[in-house]
Each structure stands twice: as C-alpha cells, then as structure tokens.
Length: 472
View 1: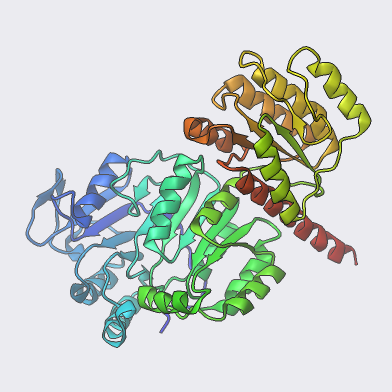
View 2 (view 1 turned 180 degrees about the vertical axis):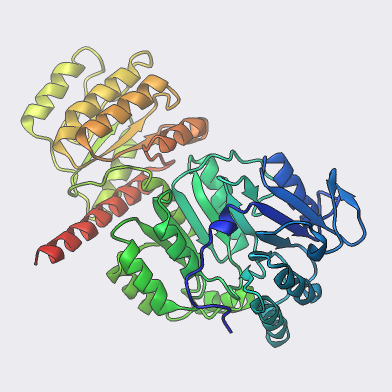
C-alpha cells in the first residue's frame, strides 16, 4: 500500500522550520538524546520540540507529552520509539498536521508478515492527513543547508553545502558514504536513508534531487525498486543533465535473500536492471568503495573528449599499474607528438636525472622537493594539450596552495580532467581532500584513478550519443 502517488515537495523535509523529536531523552547515548544534542551542537536554526511523556525539560528545551501539545506547526517529526508505539504517535502527527515523519524505529516489514501489518497501520494513520513517511527502519536525513544530521548524529561534520546527493536503502551505506565522503572531500546537497520505503521511495528522492539546482551528482544504493518503470523514466530525463550513480544490491542469490530480510525488499532481476540502466545513462557501481570513487570522479567540472590519457609520473611501478589499468578499461596511452616531447625535454634539462621516457608515460624519475610542484605543473601544462585527460602520480605536497591553484588553472585552460594519485596516500589524506574539493579528483591507487577516468569518458560518450540522436 502506497500513501500517495503524486510527486511530493520535499523542501520541508530537507529544510524544515520546526522539528519534533519523539522519544527525546536526556541520555545522549540513546537515539532520542543524540538527535536533540546533534541539532543543538550543529546549529539548527529552527524550533526544536522534544517529545517525552515523563520529562518537562530536555537539554534546556521545554519537553512536551505529545506533538498535540506543541504550540506551533511542525514540519518534521523524528521518531525514536519502539515500533509498537509508532501507529498511535503517527495518528497524533496526522491530527497535528505534521508534514513529514522519519521513522527511525525497526520492527516492521523487514521482519515478515507481523511487521508488515504494523507498517500498514502507520501508513493508514498517516494517510488521514497526508503525513509523508521516511522509513521505517532508516537513519533519516542529513541536510547541510538546514544543519540537520540524524544519520550520524554522534559525528560533528562541517555543515558545508555541496553538489552530491545520496539516497540509500541501507543505514550502513548512508553512514559510511557520508563519513568517508567528507574525509575525501565530498560535500553534500542532501543525504537520505530510506529503509523500508513504506511511503516515500527512491523514485521520489531521485525526482527531487534531479530538479534541485544545488545537486550536481546523484548517488544511490538500491536493494529493491517499488516503482521500477518510474525510476527508469526519471533516470532517462535526469541523466542528460546530471550523472546518476547506482550501486544495486542483491546481485547474487545470497545477496537477494539478505535484501529481503534487511528492508523487506525484492531485489528483482539484476541482469535486467543492469541492461536497462545502461540504456538510460545510469553509471553503475559494484561496491560502496566504487560509489565513493565515482562520486569523487565527478567532482571534475570537465569530461574527456576522447580516450587518450596522459601519464605524468614519478614512480615506475605506478606507471606500469596505470598502463595495465588503462588497457583493461579501453583507454589509450599513446606517444605524445614529437614537438611536445621536445618541449618537455627542453624544460626538464638539468632539472631532473636522465629519464628513460618522455613519450607517455612522462617519467620525472625524482623531481627535487624544492622544485617539484613547479616541475609537475609545467609538465602538465605542456602535455595536457595533446591528451584528453591527465593522470598525475606525484610525491609533491597536495596541500600546497600554489600547486592546487596552478593545477586548477591548467585544468580550466584546457578544459580536461586532471586526476591525482599521491606517492604516499596515508600521508597525503588532507591534501587529497583539498584537491577533490577543488575539482581535482584524487585517489589512493592508480587503478581507482583509471576507473574514474573511464567513468568520465563513458559519460562523455553517452552525452555525445544523445547529441547525435538529436541531430538525426
């Protein structure tokens, strides 16, 4: 049973003016306490209403026995109570006119027929006055614009708006994509953990983020689709405007069974979904790590115009790994034109030890630390004219502001992707974060960097195919 079929306006969910925390607690180790504490610590500007029948005050905020006792309108209610109490509370939310309810509680359709009946009860209660439900069995919402974080409420993340939206049918995937994504330089327009999709579905959020001008890339983790045809129709309309990256769980028989017990979803035919996705321009990921890498890849503001890759390296093993990865991905590492090699040779004379290769890969052998950023930037500027994308493996500091700005300038001048792999990624994590935030995707390993370039190249081909069809 679905609550409504028309497309909802989700602005009140991601930017609510008022929030009720149902099951609020003084104990910050409990969900209801963490949610109230997070709103206060993260600087949420709207009104916060703790709901607890036994407390008159929680964290210096007046507490109310029920949402019916709150003296003003409520945009959002977050429920952190046992599942058996949710139907009654949902009925009160409907009576109050609450617009959205995030049901954090577990114990619904993911448990089978008895839980499904309970889920039907909350839908029936919500339908009486149009409350829209996220969940149940979900982690809820992260909105940097509104300073709301119910997904990892124990973590203090910078509330810096960005261009990546994530819709996840797994709390684990939502938590990790948010936390690791921030570490790697991603910033989010919105993150939503949707659980059982009793009411609001992946399709509703895909449509919302597809129309959101702040969202540049949409990333999703899917177990089951409730409106498969609508999903593909939406993807067909959104993909020409912004990338959609999907990791579809349940590709194996065991995975499909795990999906059913996790969110009560039917995984569907993976092969059919994969083929349909390809037709609609959806970019497919195979793991959470893939999702993160691809989201980082599309921080690049430019796509390659072809499949010629330029390798600028300071590590012979990295060159071999990159070349092998490019060959597997169908990317070319062709020799640079003789005039470009000559220009590189002239610039590098007396600056580096004798190099066995300036053709492509361009091997800098060992660039002096005091000149490495200048050497790398100049070589990149020379060779970037002759290739479609550039992969740089460097021991230079990625935290050097001059270096970051110079790479940005070169990238914008040639309008081609520049991708970075540091020589020692564990020592350069902060620099990798800075690079990604400035639109220079960075990866710990060459294979990940090549996969990113391949995804950018495939999207370029997809957009070119649309242009060709429009001309025909």
